[in-house]
Amino acid sequence: MFNTTSLHAAEARLGVAYATEKHLRRHGASLCDLLDALDDPSGFAALCDLHGAYGQPTPDADKVETALWNIHRVLAEQTPSSLDQIGHERCLPASEMTLWHGARVSELLAQFRHAK
Image (cartoon, rainbow, N blue to C red):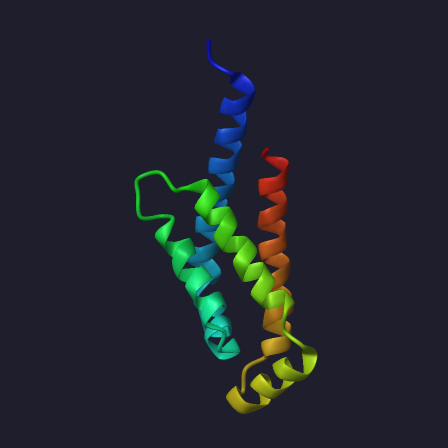
């Protein structure tokens, strides 16, 4: 007999993975620019991992969630002074971008937490 609770959770997690993919299609270039500007190899690697999770017909929800957590960590570790410096050097609104992308990643992670 199937465990319907597990099946519903897996379907919900897959739905969040697809929502993340939709978000990446719209805002991935901006996130890529930001992570590149932050010059943190782990952030850019996490974005690559996130894209790699969609390499199969069905995305790997666990890989998507892990990559989002890693991106969230990198964004959260940024200091205001470093973001101001990046903004000045690269003419990029790094502080605002970090806040915006951090909020969107947090929203996606919240959806993963509720899907369990």
